[in-house]
Image (cartoon, rainbow, N blue to C red; front, side, top):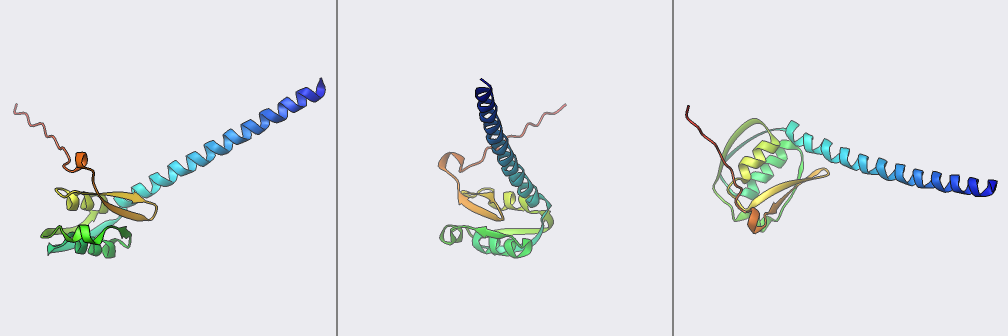
Amino acid sequence: MKKNITTLILKMMRVGLIVFATLLTTAGTLFAETVFSQRLKNVKVSVHLKGESLEKAIEKISKSSNLDFSYNNNELRKVKGIMMDVSGKPLNEVLLELLHGTPFSYRESENNVVIFRRRDQDALPVLSWVNEAF
């Protein structure tokens, strides 16, 4: 009888340890992603673009921000005529402005920013503005 209780307690302790380890690992992963996400908000970028291709624009932003970017060169070369004059603006805002009106978006991945082509349903972002006169 005493041996059965001891065995049951040991099994419960093992299950508890596994659940604790799983929760700890999950929490660590969630916090790690959040920290990098806020990093792009804190990186200030200054870039001056006059008729550049999207590829050259990303290269200049990469140099200015000291971050690595991953993208398909051939895809980004097709987008030309980029005009932008930004000084001390957060990187996430610069990327949103730069990629607005293009079929591209960005994703943060560890210590890298990935530029990718959006799917068809995401190709044109929907922005709605409510303007009421009183």
